Amino acid sequence: MQNRYQNDWTERSLFYNCRMFTDGFYHGQPYGELEPCIHIGILDFNLMRSQGFHHHIKLLDIKTGEEYNDKLQFHVVQLKKLEDAVKEEKETELYYWAKLLAAKDWKEVDDTIKGNPYREAVKDEMYKMSQDERERYLYLREEMAYSDEISRMKTAREEGLEEGREEGRKEGKQCIRLKKQGFSKEKIAEECQVNIPEVEEILKEIENL
Image: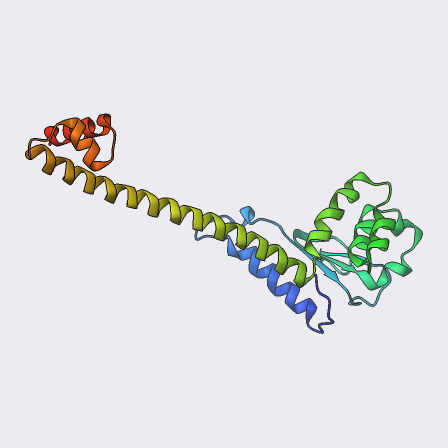
């Protein structure tokens, strides 16, 4: 969608479409396998001098009107010309979608989508896209705060695990020292401030080394 007038818009759209037309082409590929490229320009200014808000442009013979090839096409939708649309144009689905894009406020949006479930489904997405910078900032800040809290919890958990491992290593060394000194399992548990099954587990691990 282009909001501001650009006097070289036609050249720009030609460049984009032609570039895209050949981008996927590889050496040795048959020309007939080139994919169609259809450029859609939604403009908030008038480009074409002729009437009508929608123009469909193809490669044609200017004398006979015979189509040369349909793989390069252009659609130009001029939002400024919607007010001058004729009855036949207003009966098309494209007209209502263009009106939706051209709406200046939410009342216009509501008036345009009223009674059409497909267009009504788009309103929420339009609202999200049109959130102002502050709303986006607040949303981002909330998301970052949540992520920060998750990171803090993860860090604390990892530090706790590391601290627990370090404490376990200290208890293991103390158990070994007391065992060598002839202390019973009960006495070792009392000195290390752990329960007897933990002492047995530590001593068992040492025996298996």
